Length: 397
Image (cartoon, rainbow, N blue to C red; front, side, top):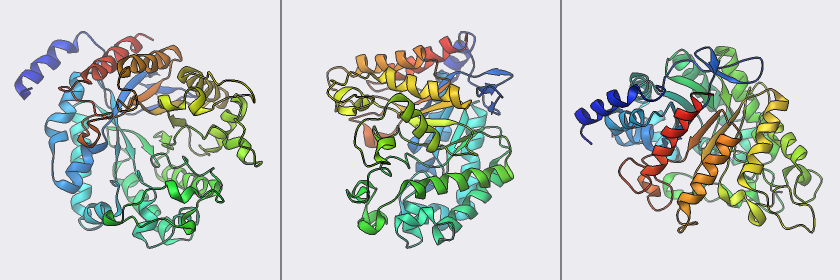
């Protein structure tokens, strides 16, 4: 769509829906997200490639058209990686052209502000890239005296100092799904499931790369502590995945499914203070027998997506910390015949459980054209339309 036509459409729709709006997001004493003086409810999108393509490949399309398109669909915020993903790309952009990197991140944030779109800035999106950069094995993430942690402290301090008062900043986030495999015992070998791409600078993993929960928890605590020493107010997200179905019981050597109370306890553990929120990602594969959530021995597991989401929201209320569903969506390769129906079920669960903040995976990411990629011109356009409609409904809450 031409920019002139797009601008006209934005003006036309502005009076019909709640305007997406950048500016500070905060947390009140009740454990709710607050914006503009009242509890905030809204659905954003993950824009994985938005800053990445600009930082590494000098492609500013997110700044020129991508964010404007999201504004058209009344998207209030985006979740983006800051220091990109693979070690070689981090070396190329963040390390090798540091000042240019910072200038481009500011330009991206400024472009988001111009569209009144908030930004959840995920700092160490691929956390395993940072030990790789420093020539250390992955457990270095849990060693406060490692070269990895020193590098991360320095990077985080600089970014928070530079961007803490930016009007587009809504939240800081640690990484993408750092907790996903940490509860799998080293005897099984959780290193097998961690990112590896030798041509991109991420070496083949070995048993020396097995991580423990304490490694990730330690890094999360320091992440939040460093932020709070500089920025006392911006919400902090972990970026975690849904807890492993038996994470609590595995601490006692059992692979039995956790019950809802145990699930809640793990959510708290995985978002250690001074992190002031709970967050997780949730996809349909967590449902039913394949997910194994809340199963009692001998029962057929009929746990639904909404059941898992409800357990997370309930823990949020108990903990008085607001909940962020950082990713939701449907893999069209896994569910080729009923993707729209499953998507409708997920979005209904978000509405039913009154999830304050959630984010669709993923906007304008061509690498996932056959699975998740949503644009305003492809067959998954209906998902952007649903996000727009959800934000309209939530604006009345």
